[in-house]
Length: 289
Image (cartoon, rainbow, N blue to C red):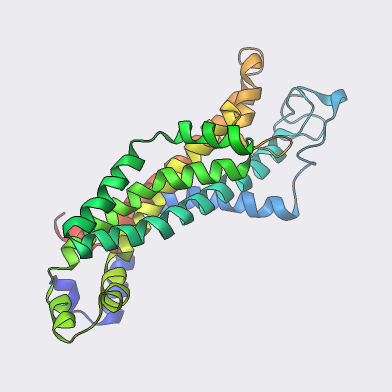
């Protein structure tokens, strides 16, 4: 038990807000900008993101009404970045959501069951962890065709082991606490203990894991789209924007720099947000600083 556990709820909330650190603020700001761009793209973009305008191909920035110029097909780069943010976040949300929904119960089960059942779950988890996500995406792409769905499934399945490991480790720690022993003595079922005691106490670390996994999902989606196994044209994708700019890397470097910068800032934002959430949600880390 920590010193913060004896504080009233209002004081605890106040101290938590006092613990908001620069990493959380910077990360939250970057993530908010990406989310804002994605949401705005649903209702407004400077131009049609998929409209090909051959007369204005490779237009420089701030010319002819194009804020960031156009690509080799005459498509507005700013509009493509905004819609690409929507695609990236959609893939990340679904992939991380699938991984959390499947990986968390497996980890809790392994942490509570122990014995042979725990070993079977974790060895299967290790086997899945050793299977490269890219190879899985190539296999799915060969069977079902490259698409956003393929990217979501590949990233989601590849992220399951991370959630299972975190959930198992945290569950093992929770199972030794006094309130779990009291719940067992009261005759509560394992399902009731998992839902009422285990999950609420490991939720904070799972939120942090989701933030970190989201950053990994952004990189994975960009890599898959770059290789042609992710989002298919004409839907904009940051990874495919990088792929299409390869041949113009030296003549028009902004076409590679802008989507690369967008990927870097989004990944940095989610990583910093995850680091800040870890400190904010766990008062023990604050006390040891």
